[in-house]
Image 1 (cartoon, rainbow over the protein chains, first blue to last red):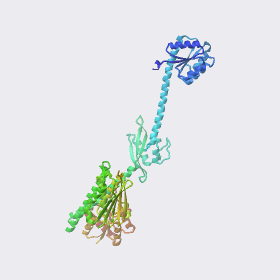
Image 2: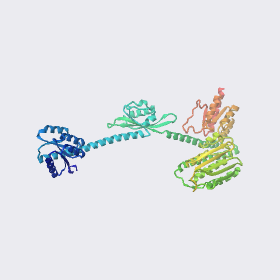
Image 3: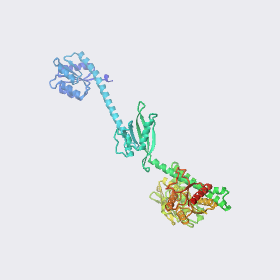
Image 4: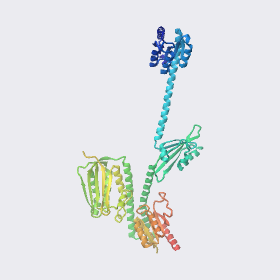
Length: 495
Length: 127
């Protein structure tokens, strides 16, 4: 503890005998004592080292003791100073206490008098040190609070959500830059009545929280289109701030940018409506035939009956294919997470895909050539997915080909990509058809395609697969001449 | 007997609709895309047009109907719709949708016949 420590005492006195005598006395009492025999030495010692206690004679030949006292206190305010003075200089002694001396002792003094005073001085010293410690701690805490405040401000200013705090008079109390950006405001003045400058839907939401707060304190949220045409959509949440009396003190408004979510939502609902249309069309057709078959009032020949049944079956088959393709599309999405990656030999994979179509090729008398550069690197991929990619493409090349047509497949390795080109001498595409080639359910509709069935999902599946392997697709096509589809798949060079 | 033009890109719907209306003695002409649809209406001046909403493009049916009206062809139009109600798009008859009646797919022959006969009757009275 502080009180157990040996106390350092400085004695400044020009009377050498007294100086030494006092030193011995105090050392016997367990103090650690330094002495200075004149004022300047006293100043240099007393300012250099922080003594617990200094005993200063007021009357010295070189420098006045008051000056010594002043200097020591200036350097170490917590050094407890006692001045020693002759009977003649009481007034100076009083002046010394005004400057900051703890006490004074008249000369000559007895050892008891001195020791008693030193005891008091020691106590005083402890109080001073304790006080200094607390002062320092308080200052540090204030600093910490100030730091905490700036840190909080930094956080509030950095978050991407817009934040606005208003008091119960709807005046702005706190806001962040994101809020200004969302609301397209240059600035908000603190304590300005902000509610009138907000989007009407947002003001309504805030008013709702205020008016509901008499009954219950709860947050309200709304999705607000801040900029038309889906340019900026936010989810606004207004929460009441309740003070200790349970009264509403203000409202915290948080604006979260949900523009992208809204865009995805729109795409999703468009997709759903496309899917439902595509699924409903074959059902409507089959339903039409069934109505004709079941209603006796329509006169139908046996031949017509058979054709209706065949056509219905064809539509049902198409519907099944479409559902399977849709399932495949969603499976590819899921598969990104659980693929079975292996080193695939594309030459072998493409050969077996061609093999799969032997019957179709023969039926249309289409010739196929396949030229692969030797020494091709293996592709790291999922066998099922990459297989599906090539069967879809080769299937299309056959489906949209002419009788006695040709298919030419080449494969090479070009700057980190395996490039597979599938060329057909088929019906080709018009430029406007090419643009929509990868859209879900898009199928070119012209006099050449009217007898070809399909789901309109085959190339969507191809695109999904290629995209998920960070590859790309290039399409060249000329109507009534043919199409070349080039697939680029990233692969590491063979080594 | 009245002549009816049916414009729909689904050949099976053309088949069944034709058969249903044929059985009631109507004469039928058909087209499976907007261009041919426009042509058969211009050339044959049918008494009634049946038009699918979605041909090559989702709104082709609307555009074709607007085109007829712009050219002062005021032949009654029945519009075939399929998923409008399911996705919350209730079509109303207005300037942008200048048609006289809707028939939801799948088509009920009885409903189709009833709507066709009603429109033709109205047309006859107006003359």
